[in-house]
Every structure is written in structure tokens, then in C-alpha cells.
Image (cartoon, rainbow over all chains, first blue to last red):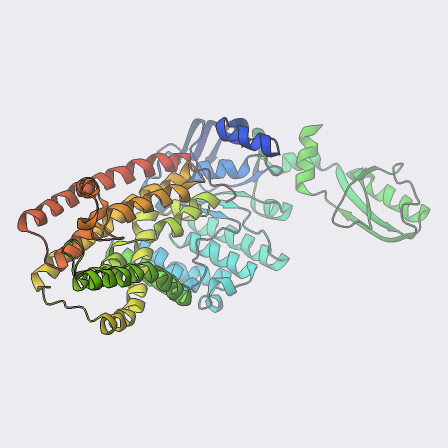
Length: 326
Length: 265
């Protein structure tokens, strides 16, 4: 087995997407001759991950993160390139490989929808051939960390999103995988839920020495868990290194959000670059350099009739996009 | 391995049980056509004395047996699996270290059968008292011969349907392909009408096709209508088609999985 747990060489995936114009004529033509468009989801990506590392895999929507995770877990055949995980080629779907890894994808279920999670857990015990003692032990540990017991007897469809997510993650870890691919493991969870999952993953990594590659939209997930991050954008690897280095590279920016007494009546451009933010239409956001935050904030407070002011890190998606589009 | 199937059974049985009302509606829908054929042919035979040597009782016993045989050998895999390929939900199952089709889907179909047969039993008894079939020709040996034939028929049908279902890796129009396949079943299996009443050409072709192994062959075994040579021929065809359907399914599945794009999942 090679020293690194995951190694990826020139991995590429091109999807062929059928394409046609709207309208009846185009529909008829496409019936006889379909046009395809090549979408290069992942292009020549290279990286290596050592045993026990937790790596954050970041990029804007459509960057190719999920496609890469799907290839590494064996769901997708790449168009070109190589990958080895634990010494296996993932897409050969060897039984020994499938027993040694897990893929947890946001909302997608390992759990049967109509029956209690307990039954799905027992099914997984059989599928992964876990001896009773080992299964009970693992379940006990997962229960300690995630408080599963009260959720086990309800049909999965009656669980809340957060409860279901906890069960999904637990179901994916019953067989104590050595490699974890996690796609948005905290999506849809409240702050406490997110923190709990994070804490759990850190603990699991410490206890078992498992290698974890995770994607997340929440900066907090990444900063809390990962020392190293890999960024891809438009299918290409853009950054691979320590999170501290990236912070230094992009930390210069903060977002200041202000709610003004008279909407739109003041020009904020002289304080910083205005930024669109759909989440809160009543607020105006400007982006400023980190070292200027104090100065600009006091300037704003002094000059303008401000009802409310917030200072935040820019969303990770924006940061990444900014860092590489400049 | 036994434990895997046992746990799959628990899960699938519980799942099917959740949908028992649904399943009963399906069963009633499925019952309509054999019962119509039964009623129509019986009344024709009654007025004419017989149809090509088939008496009213021959028709009644044929369709009453068909109700049971078809329930045992048919499958619903296209309806429970193809959508998983199309909408990407197969992802979760594909990365489990067991074959999604040959464990979960297989057991799911058997659980479905378990429930529909439970539903069918009282209906069958009512039909029995309505039509009063004379089953005096049925011998234990025929039933014993029919059991392995039905199991074989089920697996052939399941694998062929599973192969068509796996075409969903290539095309979204897999349901119409399956409709066509089902039309072949209707024509060549003896589901419409006992095969001996079909034109000679269709009978000759049907002999070499797998479809009669699902319906006609087991029914005739149960009713004790086959000679030793015919029984042997049926079993030989069965083994050949079993091997062929394993090969077809395996090839399509193997190549299909490579094309899986796990859309939206």
C-alpha cells in the first residue's frame, strides 16, 4: 500500500449533456440527431492525502467537488486519470474497498424512508458483516456522541432534517470506515447541530485515525476541523495547502453590513466596495480591508444615521471566488 | 450471507407492509384481466361444448392456476428500481458491499409477492366457489415438479426484467421498452389464452422463448398435461434461459454501472 491514503493523478471527468433549443422544431430535430455539449466537471486534478488527515474540499457551486467525491467513492467512472484510495481503484467497486470507506451525501439516504432507523442499522450490520459485539460497541460510541437512541424507533420520514442527518452519518459509520467522504455533512442543521457533528467528526478522527475529506458551505466547519484545504474552481485545482496560508491570503477582507434610517439615501462607495447580499435586502453591505475595519466603522457611525451594523467574514464561496477571479 | 437476506427481508417486508392498501389496489387491478379471460372463454366453451378440445372446466382450471403461477413468477422490478437509476438515488446502494439488484431488489420483489399472495388467497377461494373448478386431474407429482419450475421461471423473469431495468443507465425511455417486453410476455407466455389455442406459428416460436417458462409451462405441469418428453424439454429450456438471462443481466449491469452519472445525488 502506498504511504498516502488517497492519491489522485490527473483525474478528469467530462459529462456529455444533451442540448437543444426550445420549441417544437428543435424537439423534432433532436429526436433524430441529438447534440451534445461537453461539460468539463473536473480537469486534471492532482493531490495526495495522508492517513489521518482531515481535509476541507472547497469551491463554489458547480466547481466539481461532488463529482470528485463521487469518483473517489467509486460511484463515477472518470473520463481520464487515476485515483487510488487505500490501495484500491475506487470505481472497480471492490467489496473490500466498499467495506473500508463511506460516502455521506447531504440529504441522500442510506436509511429506508418508511421504517425506523434501527432496522436500517441492523441491515447495515449484516451488509458489512459486523459481529454483534463490535456492532454494539460502535453503536454505543455513536450514541454517546450523537444521542441517537431517542431517534431510533421512529420511522425515518418522521424525523426532522437534523435528526435524520445524525442518523445518516451514524449509519455511514457503523462499519468504522478508514476513509470518509463527506459531502455537506452539516447542511440544513442549526448551529448546535453543526457544532455537534463537527465535534463528533474530530473525535472520530482522533479515536480511529480515519482519513476525512469533506466539503462544506460553512466556513466554521472547515476552520474547526481542517488544517488543510483543497480548493477547486471550474474543475481545476486552485489551492492546496494550510488553512492559515489561505486566511492570510484572503483575510484582508471583512463585510460590513449597515441598516440605514433612510434607505438608499447615502452613498457607501466611498467607504468600501458595495457587495450584493440577497439574504438581507434591507441591509447594505460593503467589503473593506481587515486592517481598515475599525477606522471605517467609526467613520460610518459618525457620518450616517445607522440603525444596525454588523461586521462579518465574507461567505466562503465569495472569498474563494474572489481569491481566484482576481 | 443468510443474515444479509434475513435483514433485507425484515426491512422490505416492513416497507411493503406500510403500503398494503396500495398493494391491494394493485392486486385487484391485476386480477381483472385473467378473470375476464376466464369468464369469456368459459361462456364460449359452455355454448359450443368446447373450443378446440378445451372444455369449460379446462379454461376454469387453467386460469385459476394461472392466478397463482403468475403471482409467483412475475416481478415488479422495473417499477421499484428504474427510477433509482434515473434520479440518482441508487448512489447509496451502489457503494454498499452487496449487489443492489441481487439482494435488496430481489428480496423486495419476494416480500411484495408474499403480501400479494396473502391478499390473493381469500379472493382465490371466493372464485373457487363461484366457478367450481374440477381439479381432479391435479396430482401431487405435478405440483412437486411445478415448484422448481416456478422458482426457475421467477428467476428468469426477474433477471430479464432486471436487465431491461438496467437499460435505464443509458436511456430514460426504459419504461416503453419494458412495455414492449410485457407485450411479448402476453403473446408468448400463455397469459392471454392457453398456448395450444394460439396459431401454430406462435406456438412453435413460443417453445424456444423464455416467456412460456413463466406461465404456461408451470400451469401445464400442475394440471398434469405434459408428457415426460415435454417436461424434460421444458426444464432444459429453463436451464438454458436461466444461464442466458444471467449472462444478459450481468453484461448490461456491468456496462451500465460505468455509465452511471449519479445525477443530483
